[in-house]
Amino acid sequence: MQQIWVIGASSGIGLSVAQAYADQGHNVLVSARNEQKLNDICDKNDHLHAVPLDATDAASIQQAQQKVKTITGHLDKVIINAGTAEYVDLLPVDVDLVRRVFEINFFGAINMINASLPFLYDAVTGGQKPQLVIVSSSVSYQALTRAHAYGASKAAIRYFTECLKADVQHQGIDVRVVSPGFVKTPLTDKNDFEMPFVITSEDAAKRIVKGLDGSRFDIHFPKRFTLLLKLFSFLPHRLKFWLLGKMSRFEPQGENS
Ligand SMILES: NC(=O)c1ccc[n+]([C@@H]2O[C@H](COP(=O)([O-])OP(=O)(O)OC[C@H]3O[C@@H](n4cnc5c(N)ncnc54)[C@H](OP(=O)(O)O)[C@@H]3O)[C@@H](O)[C@H]2O)c1
View (spheres, rainbow, N blue to C red):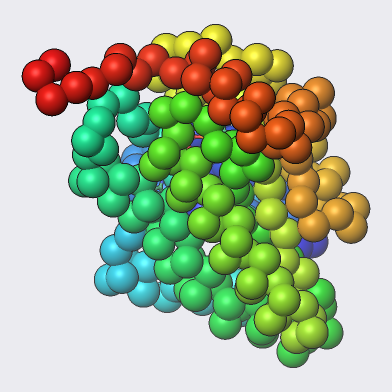
């Protein structure tokens, strides 16, 4: 039985992943800000344990670390999945919007990497090869219209994760990145555009669990979407930006408009 911590587990992909591991009999610590939601989820399953926290708040993270210590001495797997999405529709760009998105998707993820590393090192000391998993997005393969804040935050955390892997792989920590395409969750229920090849969060969870059992660094899915996006990213710039321009909703703006 593994000790697993899923951060961002009160809904969507994180909840489905936590439930999938609990169904396999593992001990799963579930974190998010909404304590009531976490308690409701954990009341229904003895393998799930609520560890409420705000990944952007140092004091709350410290409290959560103490709670983790009361449940387990080490962690075999940490999945850092908490995130948000906001799109940019107007120029000049709203810097506060960009900061809000980076605060959780980039800085929040780094806070949680720092908070979980001591538990992962304890697993290494105990002879295990623990996994540290960061949920990025397939949007990080290719810049898309309106994704200035969200896509940049996910590209930044992918880059950070690759640096981290380079530095901790020799220490026995198996760092992975997850790059989903569109998954139906409360986050994407807000989207006002068609989502190609959208899958359910249960399907996403199955692919993540399978991917983490395998050896690939980047777990991306569904392949029919992620491979198309990768292919698109290799197009010549002139063609690529012409196509992207066709998708843009931005109106031309002049001095007097
Ligand atoms: N759905 C997609 O199509 C898709 C595609 C690519 C990547 N992703 C990524 O997958 C991850 C999960 O997304 P989802 O679609 O499953 O969205 P979701 O259902 O909205 O889940 C987001 C989770 O993060 C938690 N969270 C948000 N802010 C937090 C904070 N400050 N501290 C702690 N927890 C926080 C939320 O709980 P609380 O609100 O209770 O804190 C919730 O449990 C995100 O990183 C997202 O960017 C999603």
